[in-house]
Length: 370
Image 1 (tube, rainbow, N blue to C red):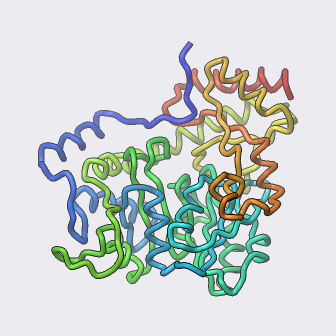
Image 2: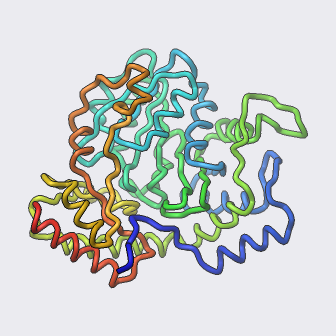
Image 3: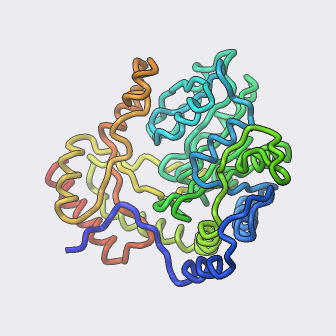
């Protein structure tokens, strides 16, 4: 019995040819301000998809977030509002700037609650980072309204949502800057990698300097920067993946429809990301199980279905943030989600028979345990 993992990269001959082309060229990276040939090709495809003026390739989603905060001048004494129900990188980049992450609760759909954001704003608040969790857009209109009222900049953590839309606009275009991840399991991948989208010429100029140690020409470092460059082989893979993205997303949505159908009639399993004014890319197909989540998980894994939990521990309860004195806040929806969510495989690497198997095994486990 084959094990069906929660996510796998879908790679083929086109990606292999692109990597070999870079190897044959001998140009594995490029330290110029503009970036190398494959970096620029990848960036142009991101710009076209999103309809933005600038896309800046970097070597991880974390680098995307960190470089944006550095470009915005976030520093010690500033506060950045973040959700706690997310991957730890969303908050870690705030600490890396010397600033304080302020954790707020989510709505039942696992994304930041605009009202909780409003209550968290102080005179020190400089940025808010909503996350489009699992590939489902957050309530950006309401979040932007609060941010604009208080002169707070908005940065989208769109690591999981490349290709998702909110009110007809792509995620990553609904704020000052959008940050994407190209990690191995994301909807498009380069193994490791990321990108920042923005319409701001000034911000884009700063970001291109930051990803390259602040260098414009030669070794003339002009500002604080880092080695956040995306290598040419990774950019070549990412460029091919951008061409394949529409097919990937259609497969994820098709697989999600099969899972939707299979869980009907199971009242203990809720799918909570369904608003009609936005589109889901189903980076993860996540259910809220009213009871026995871990028992269902164990049953599925024993049957070769790689169901998983994202996330068991809210960021503010991790040892790092406990040591920072940030673990005491009660975040009711966040902590409820941590105890009840379960994600099922939905990725485009699944065959129709695989998806049917995931659906069937979940229905059997849920019928017995919920």
